[in-house]
Amino acid sequence: MPLFDVYPLYNVTPVKGKDVFVYDDKGVEYLDLYGGHAVISIGHSHPNYVKAITNQVSSLGFYSNAIQNPIQVELAKRLEEVSGCSGYQLFLCNSGAEANENGLKLASFKTNKARVIAFNNGFHGRTSAAVAATDNPSINAPINLQQKVTFLALNDIEGVKRELEKGDVCAVIVEFIQGVGGLDQGTAEFFEQVDGLCKLNNTFFIADEVQSGYGRSGKFFAFQHYKVTPDVISIAKGMGNGFPVGGVLIHPSIEAKYGMLGTTFGGNHLACVAGLAVLNTLEEENLIENVNKVSEYFISEAKKIQQIKNIKGRGLMLGLEFDFDVAELRKKLIYEHHIFTGGASNKKLIRILPPLTVTTAHIDTFFVALKSALLNF
Ligand SMILES: Cc1ncc(COP(=O)(O)O)c(C=O)c1O
Image (tube, rainbow, N blue to C red; front, top):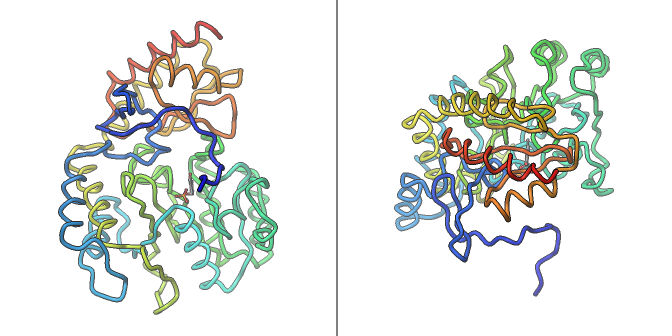
């Protein structure tokens, strides 16, 4: 049976990973500045992570959400401690789209309204409400278009005010740093005013931290760079360091009801131990401090390269913008210099999303390679 051919693939077959490196089937080492799309937080095959999953799978890999699962309770406790989101409640699921889907559904249940405000160039996943809130018609099927979503420009505070005052908006969903769209950010003033307007208009403010969360922005959550209090915070990618897990942090004022949300696999034993290993390692290895240190170094080095027209993003969620399409440059980096980087819907942008364990020495390796690759452009 052939695979359903939806992914354009690079001709590399990774079979092993260690920290910031992956190794292909021929033993070639690649520096991973893409982190498997911002997923690898504590590094490939971190010993704490391998041990936690190995021990758990050899005792109990899975049971459903019908029984007591103390590992879920422990994960929620540690997440509250490490993130600083005091009093928030945790609902666990399996992916970023599912996290946003649950967040949007909760907003609609609780406000009894249905319209969503989302932003131009945003990305929230591929399930029904999440994809409808994603500003990309090519990944929305007719079935998704029944959702009521209004797209506005980032920083269009008058637009947000006008739409919220119509009284039918259940949620405003935002990425504090846009990922797939190309690392644009709203202003502090905009985010803080949106937060206030949501509270005035009985509308949920949903922070999509699927990509920017878990330390990648230089704080545990990107929204923590601002004075805002989201009702829902969606998480996935870095949360499991590759184990499929997602979740929503739900403001203490929002009451749960049996059956309101649910899932078969969400919060399973393996996902929870993976999540715990990530949180413990982030803390033990001071990885958020490392993010800030390496980010500063990366930006200072990037500024020295004249072909780089713009440096976007923050922390280790960074973009280098050129004045040409970077597809060939990224191929050169992979095939000739053995460095993975990310792309974006902005074709002139290279995205840098390394494991949070990356060092300044790895960044030096990258810039030597980039300068050499740029000689032909
Ligand atoms: C900001 C954001 N939200 C949601 C998603 C969807 O996550 P998933 O692919 O795990 O469903 C992504 C994935 O790239 C993302 O970057």
